[in-house]
Image (cartoon, rainbow, N blue to C red):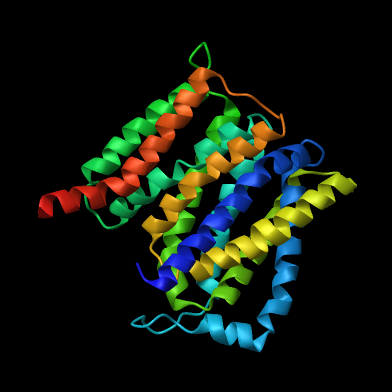
Length: 303
């Protein structure tokens, strides 16, 4: 592993820890204000925070240099809009789901994106999933059943919504891995954040009338998640994925539900049953199998 890739992976770990702390904050915020109004404020603040960075010549020059061996740079508009669409879908599903499920459960189900990354990547390249990916899917599915199924075998609507978030997030990771090495990272981040802000504002304007003024606590949550968990986090992810793979990124994101569960437990917001913890463990095992399994299998076959 090169020094540059190590720094990229450590940056992604920091981003994951930040995201893990936001589940409780967002759940409390959307209990006081409509979902898309909150998302519109969050990503409008995030987009506004990007403007000074775009006019920082030394930073844009340093980050805009493509890694060696990459093709001709792309315009950030179309890739940024596509990334923004996937990001909007992921946050729409996740934030809506958080209204009717717990932060820790939402975080673990969101983490299934790590399983979807190799599966969707395989689908796009028309190859059968490796055995480790299939094992990961089976383990994660069993864990999801333990975590989400209720006594009558019904599924919480919030858990299904967050599962949609996991699929959208997997598409976002794969797309970022494809576009980030060929696109100015700051402008790519700015376009996707602005896309989410505009889409959220449009949905809020049509579906959440009459619009209400958020409380100070909601503004605080929007500022924290907008500036730190959006502007910094997605900017850092876009830069980092220029120097590491989508698989590495997905593997690091495995730790997000762990951070979320620990943070929620530390604040006394929830406690998980033994069955739920077993489900979480199986989901983590499935994530690790899907990511680490192919490389371990390849090493074994070379011996």
